[in-house]
Image 1 (cartoon, one colour):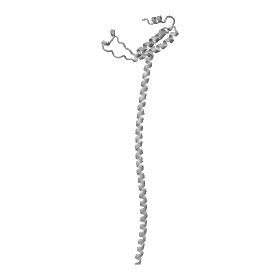
Image 2 (cartoon, one colour; image 1 turned 120 degrees about the vertical axis):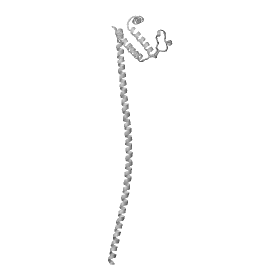
Image 3 (cartoon, rainbow, N blue to C red; image 1 turned 135 degrees about the vertical axis):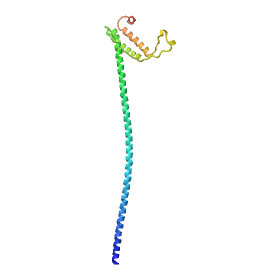
Image 4 (spheres, rainbow, N blue to C red; image 1 turned 135 degrees about the horizontal axis):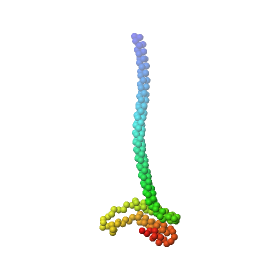
Length: 194
């Protein structure tokens, strides 16, 4: 009976130790669960931030691609406009050169043996070339009915560029004819006899 009492005391003491260890384990589990919950919350927050950053990066990439495409389109448009203006400039220069060559005989005719007339012809040629360019760009309107036409079937075209050219032409012609000695009116008549 005494042995049984000693064994019972030992068992009770052992039980107390085990309960104490169990309490310590429960407390450790509680702390571990708290740490786990905290880490899970941090992980969720990081996932959310990652998703937001990814979406923002994709939006920025889309905007960057759109801007790049727009820049490429504008660059192509600028190059096309440059080529167009270059072609127009070359055509204008070619037309101007053709007109100057076509009317070079006027400088040779009026400037023979007289340097004063040669210097007077140059502004006349410049004015004439400008007028011819304006006239070349001007397209007269279509002819109306026969009843509206002047006599002999000729149609009279009135345009500011043409009347301006006529005034400049007559003025420069008079300056050229008056470049030498003698009566200006007689020389003008003689120079422009048909």
